[in-house]
Image 1 (cartoon, rainbow, N blue to C red):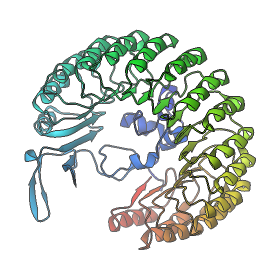
Image 2: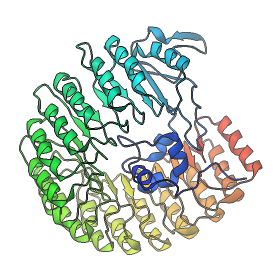
Image 3: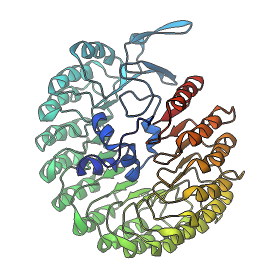
Image 4: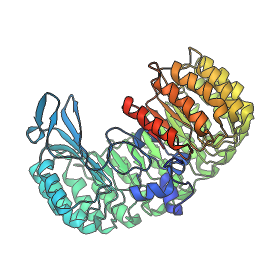
Length: 563
């Protein structure tokens, strides 16, 4: 009997490109598209976060493929310091020993994903929304008619601070309805998410009015809409308004061209409050990026996050980006992934990254045509830049020789790296001894992504030696599609049962079979095992093992086996 994992490699090029963005402030495909793509395509290019955390989040609702978490419509409740938070249900329910009436609560969270809204269900939720602080309705097949109702809710609910409506066909008409409520004096909305909502440049005039009139609004996410250069120029007029206090602006996949940069620079210069700017997946090119860097160098610019993934950047504009890194200590998060900067471009970037005033924390360089030649500069960066906590080198041809240089850097006491992403980097068993040694000495590393590398059983056996060392404090380990069999599962099981810091393990797309899966299950049963997510996509096992997995989940409800 096989697992429920979907086959990878399916979906349009656009979907695959969106899949690179992962979670955490990035796009989330509708459930149907997620199922078609399969998890492996998501994690292959996952942009900025450990996907599994979002994939099986105990607070998420929806038909996420393979996850045995909460089904659509089922209620989950939690109590936070701010009050009651609930997901996907009606406002009155029983908790053992007491009855809680959430309709009386003021600060609540409604988070529903991937649910078709019947008229009855929508009417039920509208009553609930009147007292919600946060409303998230991604992938719920909403339209402009629903926006009329939401506009009334916004008007009646001054406590609403976050509204998330990604992946719904709202259209320009829907945004016009929505903004009638958002423009009311009683509105105090701070975060607005409208990604992939079928908006065009026509919506930008409405959004400009909103930005000009609502100083409470600090986040605007409008990626994956055909706003175009003309539309975003209008949007920038609103950002430049003195009343606007925007801090985060997300414009990925908005069909922008180089001509938009002048307006963006004007907005950056007039808006020192702006901290995060994402322009990924727009056809900008080197000339536009150079111009953008001139704006970033202005004294009034205080950007902390800059994302320029898949923007047509080459080594030609890396000198200008490097100058920004030298001059702007505020810049903490830089992503230039999916740009062909090559080894020469990376060398230029490292000049800025190594500058004493640079305080970079997150650096994403996935699919940048890097080779092992870049690893000398990268090693120097990892070993000496103590602020650097997270680096992604996914889909670069680093090879074992490059990885060994990175491992040597991790052993430097000055290195404070916490996350290392080296998926699909041409690694083999040969680099695992060096990595194991690094794990024995580097106490800061929490997340290690090594999927799509031919490590083999022998390589993982070596890794486990380092993982078992008392110094190692790794929390998440991804080894999907690493040519593993049941032969390495005994060592992995020992790590699971021994290292209580390990909470997340991905072994997808490996031929573990019944023997290997049973060893993992035995480790999960151990009282000392603290693994909360075991990810086993496209691993085949018998009905008997499937029964064991289900029984284990029932016995340990905190454990999520994602398959």
